[in-house]
Image (spheres, rainbow, N blue to C red):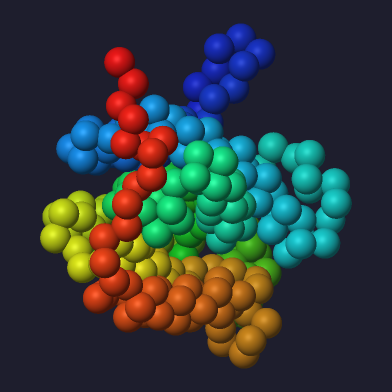
Length: 276
């Protein structure tokens, strides 16, 4: 299958599939948090507060992480260049600061947003697929996909630049079918969302669910990185993202262990006051 980028043009305005799915991911995450607040009979406006903080912090964090990886300060003002782990760190910081502003316990906020994070990530990866970015290595599987206009195109030359071993006699301009790792990630994290959503009312201590989310996210990304075509394997066969994934899993298991028997956390007066 040959896949081309999804782009909409409205005069001088260009909307990419990535931008569209990023917006959808944030909106769906906000809606899910709002549904949970409604179920708990708490202030629903907190969902929009969380979303705004996550958008601002996430975009800044994703950009700064990309600049740190590329060591190119000019990339800060480019249209592309958003790294998920940077976005996660920046978004988490923004949401944490917003929680402090409203005096909402961090454990409660973390528990609240865990399923929404998984859903948003799964939807966001569809955006990566729509702009033909973040694909995997070559494959002969029936669902392998060619990205002739990808970011970058899945040509022999570009795959070699990602340190993929290919026969020396292959034409550098040949477009190869590769693993659609974006779709793999979407499927895995949407499955994780359904598990987290089902457990949200039955999870152990407040915050335990966020630990489980971190474990899911870390394991999923570590496994997918094995298939990804990447040029940042500075740790032997392992990527920087895999190192961060291991750290996330460790943090997640620690959170689950510490919060498993913890008592429920009171959401605080701000959330308990439902506006009319």
